[in-house]
Image (cartoon, rainbow, N blue to C red; front, side, top):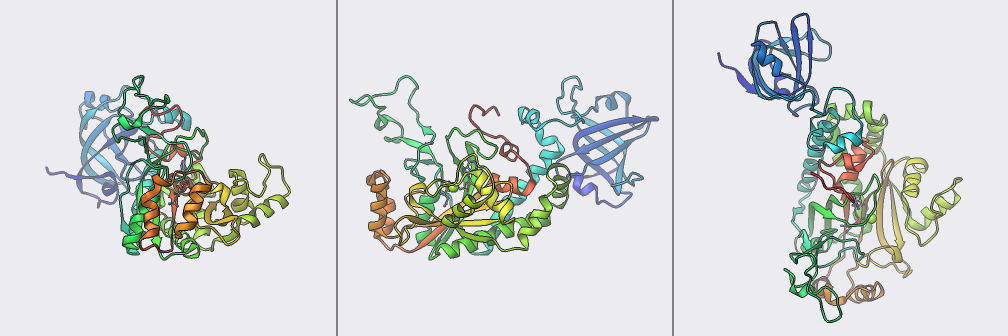
Length: 463
Ligand code: 4AD
Ligand code: MG
């Protein structure tokens, strides 16, 4: 007899009577009146395939090895299922056990586990309902990102992971070096002598692909990067990772208004895409993780984003009738509590805050006429706070040089970035979307460590 090899997803829509072979990991096993019920899942769908094994259908020692967590292949006939919530099940004729899992030691049992516990078994947690759903959504979201830009004629470019410049002009970078610890060559003044290192100068993991993306935007007009970025800041919060993925579009001839419009269209598009392609997984998040997920996503699709300036935002925060951990004050960066208040409580939708004080933003943002604020934009969303950071870029050579001096950055290190303003400069803008922050928004997951397969945070890079 020929059995067609299918995924669980395919099996669930096969016509009754089909002879199939399905493979996967046993999620549960139940024995009742001589019949064994086994649910297998292969990650192709939230829903698993129910196997029904009648007494004597397979050898007893084979069936015995089918424990929760074991990996098996099952062959049989697709039959109509009497059980609620599933159209079909598999009446099993043969089972092959690839690998059993000792019930005394397999840590992922049917009972609910805490997120903290599951983080300690990140190598196995993808086999749980929650993480299966998270990583399927992650896949769909990444695909939606590429499709959005592809449809709009953006060029997908790859910017370097190793860099010798600090894009954000702030500290908190990881060194990249081949020097042996403890044997660092020293300069005459006792500093590490990076000129003897692999790149003959100090090198780091990138915090952003923006500066290189600007160079490419000033050749291809519209580009985007989508890659890993690294921040060594010691912030142990539910929204910060040391290694996270960022999507950075950069567009020549775009001013801040065009940039804001693109950000809004982009967020709406990727939300709509995931809602269309991950219905089953989103329904789970809405039911078990965060009851407002679907409602907020639908709301975003149907409303336009609020636009306010930083100065207006600070006024609104000062007028708010509440006590803050950090008192809002002009010139201080907005804290997560402020960002969430604005988007979650006051406007109840995404808010774009623009024109921040230059002293709290990076050197490359375009200076406003007032000489105090820059053409920055942050997109804030309910539950998560800042999800996008971006700006119109300073395209005037003299102003940019003055900003480098003002912020204490060495002009020589930015020679090529300044060249872009010397040769064929153009107004341009861009932004960065934190991929994991977007994942938190879509799924309602409360901790950023639970939306990336193997999180890196201070003190933690086990897997
Ligand atoms: O606001 P950020 O620092 O902006 C930039 O890096 C710009 N160069 C982007 C650009 O204009 N091309 O970071 C952008 C976004 C934030 O809004 C946030 O969503 C996310 O990246 N992000 C982090 N996500 C997880 N962990 C961290 N430590 C993050 N830091 C920033
Ligand atoms: Mg930011």
